[in-house]
Image (cartoon, rainbow over all chains, first blue to last red; front, side, top):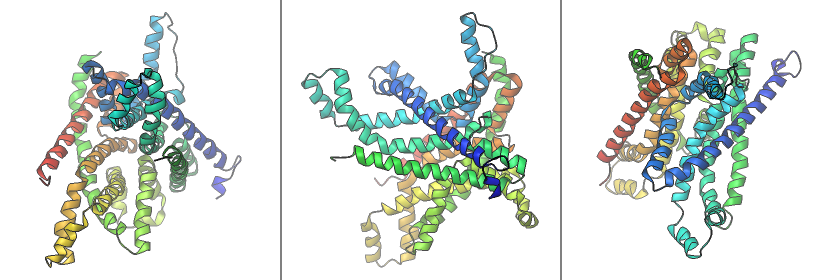
Length: 230
Length: 224
């Protein structure tokens, strides 16, 4: 227990901040994932074969390749790609990107592929009559999407999105290989300096269990809220 | 785009893919037994056994695989008593540590898949068996297990693909699997995109193969 005390001698405060970092990365990655799914879900649902192919390529590649490999691509390739773009605009200095941004982008793209699939499934399982009724009533496209399709889609998507959230939360542990100090990295540092890996990694496992448990409880509430009236 | 690097790294990566497949097949083999055992325990009426099996699957599904590998590889070696037992022969090898972690992890997911398959078996099938005078043991082994395996094939196919991606974590405990070799080539040549294309292509090919094998099995064992 001494090892977990706050202050200079213990690792309590470090692990606390690391937990906050894990939460921050997960939320950022989830939001980036939503951005990606906003772009790619319409592509996957479109009737145009070419657009369809783009959407399918994204989800197939990301879901078929290990997360760690994607993270390595971003970690080693990220600053190179940014520098290449900058060189077009006439900027040749070395650019280093923050580990937080690289990590959340990598995890965000992965979680985006999963949430794209979730949204696609949810929209496809909405009754066809709903779309037709909107057209018959002459709604504008964005109004009918926002007021009719969106609420029904969310109700169907939330249980599966909670799975995506769990996957994203657990995937953030992989960012530790890039040196971002989140739970896993902090435990690695603590285990290295105290020579007590069993304790610190078990404690990391408990922290992750706590995070998944609490987020499940919160998401269940959301689920109840959105399934009102069904 | 450095095509010659892609060509020279291909044989190395293919060799490493064999290691990935070995890790995957061994951990799936052990995992399916663990999964079946815990699925049966989950359906037990005794609340202690039941809760124990639930706790196991909750623990392994709620924590990242990386933590599990690190606990087994770095953590267990710390216990003095443990080092003196014969188990140490197994646990000092990163290869076996990785396989044990993967097997325990996939076992937890498999137990959930099999449990839900057991629960969705139509009671009529079991009743039919009973009314024909077949003993409970034979109903379980000859009727319930085959039907449950058939029901859980699609979900288990997904689990195999997830596990294949999971084996990439073996590279964090010094094993040179496909991801490990890919990282090594990236960090020596600083050409991440080329290596990613080749290594990712190999992974996608394996995903494609697994997907089609499962599809074939589903067709073969369908009820119609």
